[in-house]
Structure formats: structure tokens, C-alpha cells
Length: 181
Image (cartoon, rainbow, N blue to C red; front, side, top):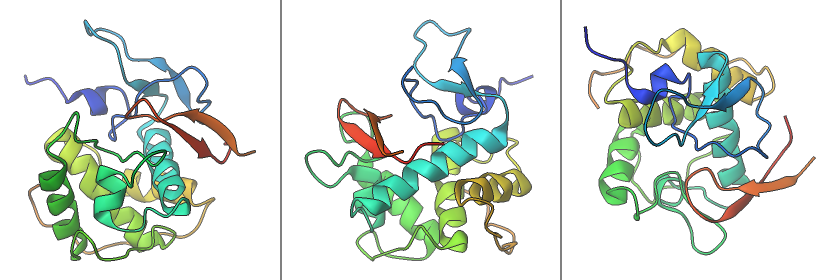
């Protein structure tokens, strides 16, 4: 039987790096059972998705309002989800933009529940090679938690495929300011 992807095993389908100072709701520590532990572990898939959604909102709040700026970063102090030092950022951004039905440099609003859900799902698919057992209901609930309980629309089935504290960025050596909780 194949092993689930690392992000799924950790209830962290966005593969958020572990930092002890990040006190995410439901974060239970650093991953275990791997030779190079790096990623956070969460008590539930929904709380891992909530953290992903909160980070995406943080990026948006600091002006990262296109898929390329969210995935690749927007200059010093504004790291992206998948920095070029670790990823083929252009391909990643193109896949995510396709899933959203926008161009990589088109403005998006991640405060919109439907947009945040699509963006979150696209990142989960890219990070894990598909949904890998993550359900759309878990994505909707995690996104709702990230938005403070906002209703998230039930989407049509997806196409197969692809307190203001400052913390270290989950994906690079920079830092970001994330609203507490």
C-alpha cells in the first residue's frame, strides 16, 4: 500500500515549515518519522488547512495579490509560498493560476471565500500530487476557519489533475507578520 504524501501524513497539506514561535491553532509540533524533519504537524486536516488559509491572507494583506506574487514572492520581506530556491516557481504559479481560471499576474482577492478555497485546493494538489485523500469538505471547513467562520460556497467538482506578531516565514529565511490565532 502506498504511503500518503508527507503533507497529508502531517495534516499539513500546504507543507508549512515548523517554527516553534508559530502558535497555530491545532499545531502539535514538528513532523516525526523522517530523516530531516521540517514541516509542522497539526491535530486535524482542517486546522492544517486553516493555517494555510491564514498564511495566504497574510500574503494578500501585504500586497501579494496575484498568483505569481503569492507563489513566488514579491521582493524583500515578501517571500512567497514556493520560492525559486526550492521550486520551479513559474510552473507552480502557472498550475495554480490555471486552477483558478486566471493569469499568473491577474489580481485575485483571497478574502473572497470561493477564491481562497480554489487557491487552497490548487496548492494542496500541487504540494501533494493531487488531493491524496484530502476531501473538499475538509478544504471548505479549513478555509471557513481561516476566514473566522465565514460560509464557503460548495464548488462544482474540481477537474482532476494537477495580535500582529512577527514570525519566520514558513518557506524561506524571511519573516512575516501574521494575525494571532
